[in-house]
Length: 117
Length: 186
Image (cartoon, rainbow over all chains, first blue to last red; front, top):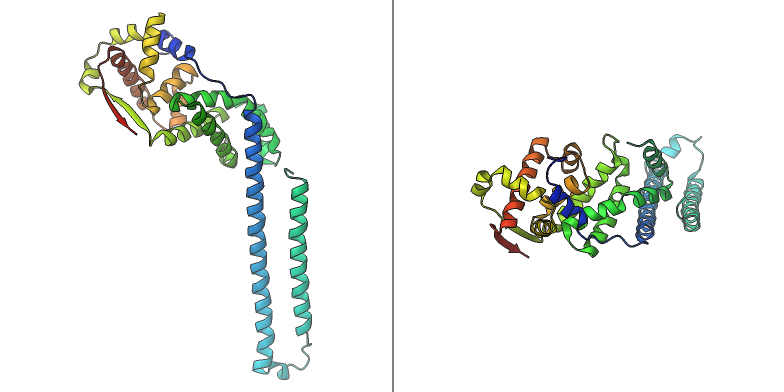
């Protein structure tokens, strides 16, 4: 069907006037692609940040519950050797939050300066 | 698949997205021609070609290298163009009985003659085919794709493609003779 026949149809299709793509098509496509990559990266970072924040909140809530259980159940009295680390836990939580935020900000700045790396 | 292409794809997957320019440069015109054949609108075809390359980039991880990159991106282009034209239908129907009683000799003669007059009539007839039919003959006659490649692009069986090509040839003959019923749906 392909080699011997349908020469007329083949000629008609190949000779029909087809517009060509503009010379800057590749450039425009790559620009759109870079924009798409940037958006995807932004979404990924946001999701990662939200996840980290959720983990942090859950951990902090867990630690708070744990500490409060000492005071309500008077476990502290039963375990006199337990150190009083309530304030340290809070400071540690704040430090973690500051570090996560700093990490997020630094990553955003780096990506703005090096968009495609 | 060419080794060079495999290296480019691996490089892109490793984060070097600028390498994608090579693939866009190489395939954009072919993809554009196929889509233009289906949509018959330059602006739509340009936009859909761009969409095709964006979709291909986003799904590059899913490319298993079982077929060539060319076949894979043709499949994306074909699906993108067919979906875009689904809402806008302009179809010429032919009498099914006429297709069965057509003489193969007459069809062969009509489609083989490469006189200017005949080519013009054929171009006119091709413009009346529906999107899928145009895509099929464009891939087979214009891009010289094999039946096997077309099967991979359209995800249809070999016998199905052969039957469809045969029916399109008959339909073109009838369209040249003006024996069709038109139906426009906008």
